[in-house]
Length: 424
Ligand SMILES: NC(=O)NC(NC(N)=O)C(=O)[O-]
Ligand SMILES: [Zn+2]
Ligand SMILES: [Zn+2]
Image 1 (spheres, rainbow, N blue to C red):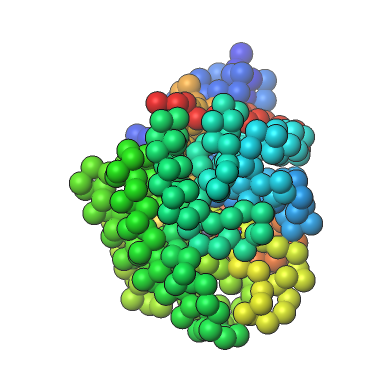
Image 2: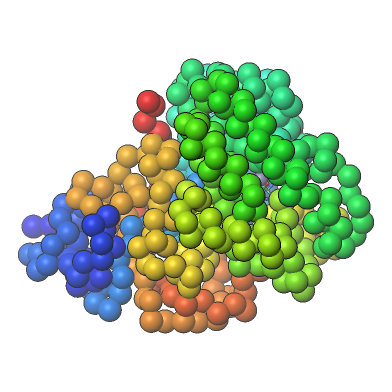
């Protein structure tokens, strides 16, 4: 007998949306077929879509060290509530930042205890980082900030650090992910307003940094991933490099798609981020390139802070948006269900995580059960974050996640396990 049968849903598979049951044994999918036999456990999915659960490769859960900003327990519970069974945590905002083996071990210990869903850990590419040590522990890759990170113990990667780090990463068979903004061009604050913030971090600062990172990746043979691309022109650089054979991918985030500068002015610091939300021409171009398949996946870049750091003037406030719970529900309002599933799962293949990212026999039994006929208005009380704050509160969402399973299990603290990439 099967351990679990998810019965009667519209199942989103790599071959299309099928009306089928999903059989599970030992935490893995055994079959996707109509009318499977009994399972020890049964879940009634009639009327629901069964998606491969999402993998969010860009979150800052800030533990250990800044658990009062978010935390692995609350952050992972929020992701699970939003249809995600896995995340990769960024090396910074947690203290110590994950730039050596000991820091990796400390975060692994906390995540193993607290996380409701599976997790991978990014290592940090900063001057003096112990990349070999991190690779041996199983990091997903190395994250570099090309501009100031806003965190004093996570230095930005100067050109030498970035170029030489990419050469080492290439030898280790791991990718480098960059926050691509030119440090000098973004270093000056112009004034207190939203428009000042936008003007202090112009698109050209993003384009210059993306171009430079691509040049180094091409020279070193390092696999490059550009995080949170905010502009259509930024995606165009990635597309052009890929066309000439560079191993480069990019992501964008819901805030660059669904928030406008006017929204940021109305919402204030809870919608502050870097790079900033762009004006309509760049945002329209970003949408067009996303719809055209040029953006590999959509991540939350969930990066909240304590409420005090979001309370004051816009210019002084922490830059980072809380949104991990809403990525899939937002995308389901704008894309067909299979496209929304692809945009929230394809990080698994890019970062070589076996068993994740597709709903097919042999894969982990990671499902998001979604009601596409249940529009609702997001309330603060729905949010599972440490602080129930998000720019999407009050927004009408077109779909609602009813349940998420991780290897056939209900998410709960301690369920999550470390995901390590397959080294090429
Ligand atoms: N230190 C951060 O978490 N920064 C984050 N903040 C943003 N995006 O505003 C990021 O990903 O760059
Ligand atoms: Zn960033
Ligand atoms: Zn980030």
